[in-house]
Image (cartoon, rainbow, N blue to C red; front, top):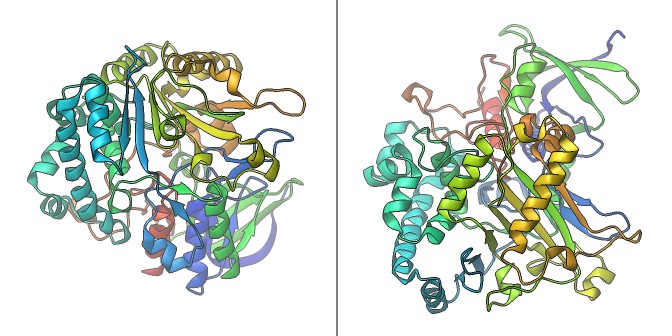
Length: 520
């Protein structure tokens, strides 16, 4: 079918209306640019959405992404976003897999109680090391995070900024080395190392830097490393970005599937072709195209051979009648309020990686969970609130997409069963006994594998970062001063998680792409 061309020309066309795409659109529209945003789905937000996951249940869960750490305050102020982020008192709760009646509870408001908790799991000697280690990462965050809203620094400048010791331990050497030197307890080491493996299929002692880069992003957010709960769920975040973009004049089209991009030339504009739900083909030109999609998707749209990434996680959403009983003598409302670590000792992380690398779903998946409704109950309807129900979000590690390709349904079911068995091993009752049910009697639980994310979000390989994370600075001195969003085509920029400082719900990539356009 020939393209139905309206001869429309825009200053910028944004491909994808995830939170980064909306961020880019908002900045450009507020700067007076004409902006068209094209989104394949029937709604905006991408992975940063709230959804009524269970039929007939008035609960809007953060279906995919769920916490916020990396969004700079500058973005919220510059765009006037009405977003409330709530800090969690309890950092983490970790039952001892050997004896689940013992558990480590890190209470940021009670250092004495935290010290006693370290002692209860046989790790009293690691309590001081924990305080020293996170004092160190906190200082690193305070120095490094303010740079993410500026053009990229070069490696020499960053090394000088963070100091030779931190450069050595957190950049040059495997992150597993400094963790092993700092802590004696296998359990404590594992709690620390999980930040290096979220969405990243790697070993913490590998020299490729994958785990190091993941760890860095997880400890620098906001200049403190805290991970906060978005009040109203992730939909509140993307909803605010949509509001600002539309109010500034950006045109946002949903059900618009981009099929091709002509990158143009220094002397001619770029062209974007898309198809609507009725099969009609449209095209428009623009001075710049901002690809808030994965780099692999952009390559395909440009007619190039894409390099397909591989995600590595299982996301499970649950609605509970009540919080489950614990084997440890801890209040569930404290244990589930922070990050609840399940079978995530350092040795268990290594064992699960080895199993997955050999082609098997881990027999005892390491995982972590958190309960949104212990911090924010606004995502529940009045009846659910009155009934005291809770949401539970579980994120299982080392579940690469390759394990789900051959038979997505069966492999997802198998992964869910082993993951729930892993959770049950540290509870005093099966988690299924705590699940709420829909009006039709179905249990309120859903699992999403990397293959599911690929299908539902057009996220290649289900990789939540759109590919391996990069250092948040230029790796070559000659690239210092750029924004980390540039491509081989001067009119095309990466504006999603695959940008140099992308990954996580940060809006940094969208802002960086907008800054690159506005600096032209």
